[in-house]
Each structure stands twice: as structure tokens, then as C-alpha cells.
Length: 408
Ligand SMILES: Cc1ncc(COP(=O)(O)O)c(C=O)c1O
Image 1: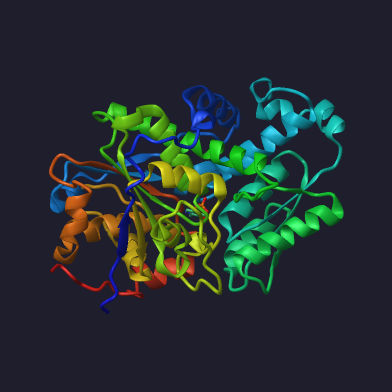
Image 2: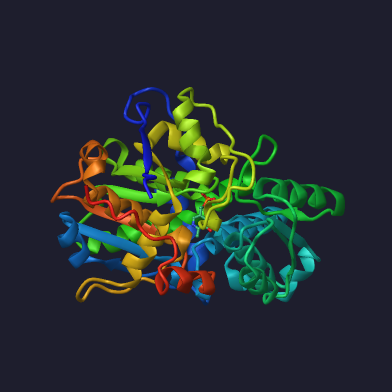
């Protein structure tokens, strides 16, 4: 196998031109988001796992993995966005500020009666839809969730287990989004989608704000372990998560923000292709986007996320599936006393890419470009656990998608 990762450095990231506003990811806004999340009985900060033996082996100071398999018992970070967006939407309908509304208050009989029956809808590879369906269930509302063709049955069953209606369609992800949007319009439902388009900005903005809880927790945890990261590796589907993480760190640290790397599967690398085009305008990828990284199989960038990434993100990477598989095996088989991380395909790709860059001599150019060295403290997000357990075992136990084995 000779396919390697491809990368492009973003010359736009460190100039002093006018940049996208990060106000919606400021410390103040993030505090409101965290307060809301902390009002859920299921809330607990997910662990930040320090892989010090792996860091030593790879020649860097620290590798820290934010393990989102622990999030709200749902095995992925995505519920952070769905819950906050639904919270903000309901606050708007009630003419209240989100700061006045805890999860408990939203569940009261009085508020439930004021709101009446609401149906939330969304399209999803699994994780986002499960978060939306779960939030609707918790608040006594209905959800209808659409999935692209080829979606995992286990993920569908997990969505239905919340009481939501769930369907695997014959469409790719971006067309499933259009189906959900069309049905929302037709039936008076509320679409809670993690991507933005011209006439649809509020909910995706709130979803991105919701993700800030994960970054804020990670930063607090890293501060306890010696300070902010020098590098952040984050994966992208539509780029809402990556935009939120990038925006959070750029807002917190301005010019001294960590070097940020955005990672995508090569079959669905719309953010990488947008960067490659070089004019600041987003580009789409179409077709089946046949990758094991189901959560990242999205072909149309989120416009809010893309603007932030174009203005602030340092490097964009497009990588083959085996890199994600290698990341899963590395995290599932820790060195020495390092803690184990159960990480799914979309969750583990950032670790796979990082180790490839650190150990593959053919990638020394990008290693130097990123200034990765013995002083680097690297934060990676493992955004999901084994959300498709059969596929997890095929890869981690049986060695499906073997690594290229390149050390140079
Ligand atoms: C596990 C996982 N990681 C990362 C992402 C990427 O998020 P985004 O689509 O906002 O880029 C997703 C999206 O569904 C996901 O499910």
C-alpha cells in the first residue's frame, strides 16, 4: 500500500488581515454553554488521557487524548452540540435567556405545556442524530432521524432506542440533509443540523458553541498537567467541530494559539480541497464518500466552520483509511502503563495521523513544518468510542485495513 497522507499548509492562517469573528466562542459564551451542560444529571467532564509512554516513544513531550467515549453515556462528543442547540432553540421560543434555563427547568410540566409538541429532525451518520434523538427524548419531545445509505444498523438501533423514528435512506449524507430539511419545511418540524447554509445559521452556530464544552474541559485538564498545548489535531466531517475547536483556541490565545491541524478521510476531504483551491471559497466533494470514517463522510463544508478554518487553521490533511485503523490499534493497545482509549474510526484518525507524522521518515517535511519536536505537547480528540463494535473488532482484533508499515 503506497498511499500516504497529503497535506497543505495554510498561508492565510498567521497573517494580520481581517478574520472571521470568534465572539460566539469567547470565554463568556463558553461559560454559558458549560453551565447548561453541567445542569444535565449525566454531565461529567470526559477524561483527558496522558499517553506518556507513547509520547516518549514518538519523541515528543506529551500526547493527550480527550476520550469522548465517556460523553453522557452515548459514546461520542456529538450530543454536546444537539443538546445546546435544542436548549437555545427552546429558550428562544420561551423568550428566555439560556442562562435562566437549566435542563431541569426545561423538563418541568409548566414549560413542557408552554412549548407544546415539537418534532426535531436531522440527518446523520449516527452520532449527531443519536445526540439529537436523546435530547428530544430527555425533554419529552419527538425526533425523526435520517441516515445515509450504507449506515451501520447498530447505529440506527441506538437512535431508535431513544424512542425516535430512524431511517436509513438511499441517499448520501449531503442529500440526506436536504431530505431532512425538506421534510422539516413540509411538516413544520425543527431541523437540528450540524451544518450551515445561507438561510440556516442559528442552529449550526449553537451546535458549534455546544462543542466548546469539550475544548474548555480539555484546556482546564491540560492546565492541571502543565499548561496549554503546543499543537491540536482535530478531525473534520463538515468542519463544525474543527471550526469550533480552532475558534475556541484562537479566541483564548490569539497569536500564541496552538498550531492546529485538521484531518479528513481522502474520500471526503472537502475542507482539504477547499484549502487547496486557495481562494477562501469552500469546495464540495460528491458521490459515495466510501470511507471507514463514517462520521467524517461529509462532502459539503459548514460555512461557519470553514471561514474560521480558512482564517486560522495551520495545516489541512487528507488521509487514507488505514491511518484511522492504525490510530484505533495504537489507542486500544497502550504502551506500558499508558491508559487505554477505545476509539472508533472517526475518533482515532487524529492519533493515527500524528504517529504517522512523527515516525514515518517520508513525512519529515510536514513534521518540520509543524515544528513537532521534543518540547511538543499535543492534544488530540478521540471523538467517539466503538460506535460500530463489529467494525471495531474487525480492525483492532483481526487487523483489517493494515498499516502501510512505512517508517522511512
Ligand atoms: C465521531 C465524530 N468525529 C468527528 C466528527 C466531525 O464533526 P463535523 O461534521 O462537525 O466536522 C463527527 C461528525 O459526525 C463524528 O461523528
